[in-house]
Each structure stands twice: as structure tokens, then as C-alpha cells.
Image 1 (spheres, helix red, strand yellow):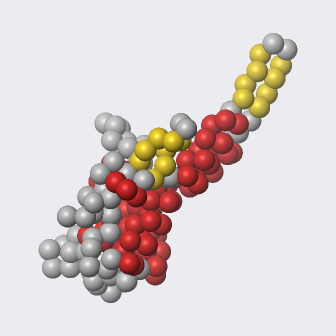
Image 2: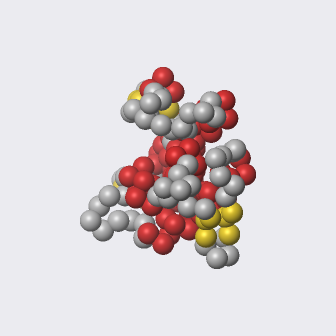
Length: 163
């Protein structure tokens, strides 16, 4: 599942930004939250102290694609929120004589992405789809989940197709 998250957040460089261990910890927290918010094929036990998720939703015996997709979207959402907070911490403006530096726009852009179409809103829509269409796989075959509206990415649920 860490590889799915890595693709979702575009952390595919030769030297990735996030270590696997960090993504696994975030995924465990996301799994804990998703397990509470949805009804799934299996009853999952998420133990934060021992860093375990049982049963394994990716195994052949307990395969649960809806849980996997939703947990990965929630983990990407957690990372999106963290990035937005970091950007807000760096939102400064400075002017001295004829030189100026203004990083407030970066924080504003991150916040707009978070509100209008980052992984958090994608997760919310997929969770609602899962609740309504429990016989379908949540997030299955999302083809181009983002579109650009006035320069900001946003979720378009017209691009969701179930296979």
C-alpha cells in the first residue's frame, strides 16, 4: 500500500521525500480512521502501539480493495494537510528597500487545493460512494480524478467509472 500512496502523492524520485517507515505509520493512522468511518468486507484491528493491521487487506484471503483504496486516499489526505500546514508556517512577507519577498501566495494556493480538490475531498466522495454502493469497489478505476478549474485542481466525480 505504501507504493500506492507514493504514486498518489507523486513521491517517485530516485531518492523519495518520504521513507517507507513514515508512509507506513501514516497509513496505519489512516487505516484506523477509515475503519471507523466505513463498513468493509473484513473486521480490521488496527493496533497503533504494535504498528499492525490485521487481517492484511491486500492478501489473497482477505482482499478488500475498497479498504485499500480508501486507506490510501486518507493517508494522502493526511500528507496534503501536513504540506498545507508547512506552507502556512513559511508564509512570510518581507520588504527592504527595493527588494521584497512574499511567500504568502504559496500557503494560499496549498490551502485552496486542500479545500477544493486535494486528496481529502477525493476521499470524502469515495467514502460516500462506498457507503451508497457497497457492492462496488470504492475508488475503482478513477480515470483522471482531477481537472483544472480557474487554475486550481478539483475533483470531478464525473470521471469515476466502476469496472
